[in-house]
Image (cartoon, rainbow, N blue to C red):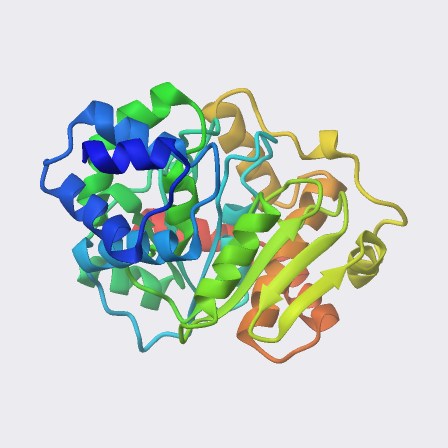
Length: 334
């Protein structure tokens, strides 16, 4: 391990096998906390290589508590976080909007480490009980249309770093790994990335998988479609570029790009829960609504062959009719 650390700090890269073995050794407790923190933070100085990312991911997927929902045409909508933008919980809102249209969502997430409120903070605050019981999760997926996989319950190695990551308060390699280690491996994945180089590494990796994916990066550093700037998408159809003007035309709601200040979240989890419920209740600002809807729209378009405009209408109906909020109510009642 000392040799690997020395190499990493000399800016050398790991082979796929070395990266995989690091996670396996972590899971066995063979790497001490100090060494582990050094490893997970070194990637703040550079992005992982494709080989490193594949190796890390292989280890997590082999070690995780596995569940099989392969019969569902489901989607995960998730972002890397770590963009320091403190937005409201856009991807989680998009999940409930998509579920409100009748599609299936298998959301994977965790507590916020580099952000104020992660999806797990939000759902726990709302009263959702985390579980890794496959039958309970299947029941939620069948009866409600959405289930939530709290990452530490499926990836025990993450439990070793929950407090350390929170105390660090900065993004780590786990921000990059989180979106790509959903233990259910849903057929569709809508991934938001805050860094263009990381977007491309994801793209190279997903080209060698069977997943139907779309990787999104807002050019001003958001890990979502935010309508604040132009956006790049990477998918099985290749690389696509959407100007902010083109994105705004999908709904026709705005004539010019959105002010980033209008996307700000709360100062704590309680405030973010209030914002979340307000938007889900159809009482959000026009900006909050549109950003939530545009992400749901692109997620739906990944799952079907309908036009962006038609999928926007489906998403809008889900939010405005109260179906999206009803999904949350049903989920919390099970």
